[in-house]
Length: 257
Image (cartoon, rainbow, N blue to C red; front, side, top):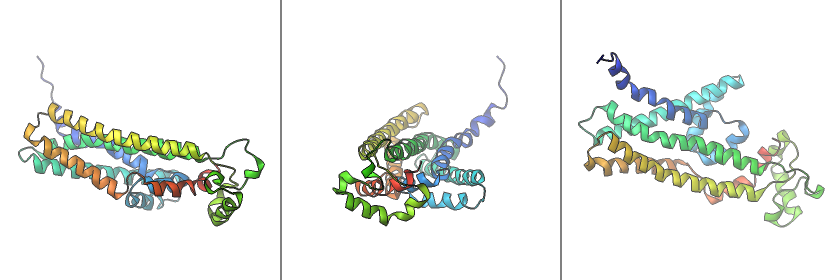
């Protein structure tokens, strides 16, 4: 049987190739959002990540060059996080090489990177669609906002005046679909926490497939749990108070779309 030559090089370097996946999804989420969605992104994702990518995105004068720089900064951020997880895996798996330990950690982390990318579509864009202007609404609602929530056209008009700087670039706001936005918010939370369960199940399968000694499973899962807790504490996800802030302001950013 013929021996396949040069295969070892690609096997050894597989960790670096696999890091492209989490890098891309972090870059897509943090670095490419347009200004209107960036308003919601600052609630959904860690503000430090958004500011870092925004700094590089704003360095360029051209729109597409700025998006590329923002994506690249977000991708580097995703790769660094994956490598740090690999470092923790290596600390537990002392007898393993860093590349082998980090490869397992990076493969598991791809799920969180995918979740981050999906949430930008599912939560930001879908919720944004729920907050956009509706067609054929009563004329008396023009310029009003959240009448159902605040109980009167007068209160809605005051909110509109307070948010006039948001309103000017995007035209007149007609109405918003509050129930649709709330439904997407609830769906996104269910989706996010269900995905966390999937993260641990897939990690377990990765440990088994890569012949990780069973006595290390618990410690590696604790690393994964710690990563999730840090990510959540940094600002991933959204609280009810933040949701309330969004539905009282986002229509002024999204209404002209």
